[in-house]
Length: 235
Image (cartoon, rainbow, N blue to C red):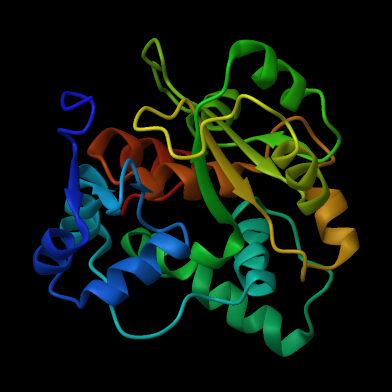
């Protein structure tokens, strides 16, 4: 067990590294912005996620975009006009699309709530067959043409509609606090318009812009380059 926990650090250590309070770290855990587990009495945070946030995401003042605006940015980045926005909102969304890619992880954090878990193969196969599930992350990026070689054991990554996530939570044998998750689950907010949710899950994979945003969340150089390539950007 000790070997499995070597990549995890206490909340207080994470707070010192990020120069924020422990409560702010706990809020980042609750929002899905930091990976965490609770193997005993204390919460542990993934050290790699803390390092990435400290050196890449660089928390800034201000809140992420609303879920509706975040998805509008992703639609525009995929060359699709978001029909749920007013004319003034569309102007704002287009400005956000042009923001530096380094700001995207913060701006678009509200698009979904992130969960990580470990599932047996049979359960993963069952989840993939549910209505309201779309492939995200590096797998979706590769299907959209990203030049990525994914290593063995790369976690599955899915977007789930709220109803699909409710079904998932009833399944047995899922390790929600696993120190070695093999799936990343992004649950879209139930506040989104029904027509938008339907469009998100209309295809097997999420949109090109969404896949790029998932890559940018990873924070490593390879993923950033692939995201920029998908978006036709050079920043």
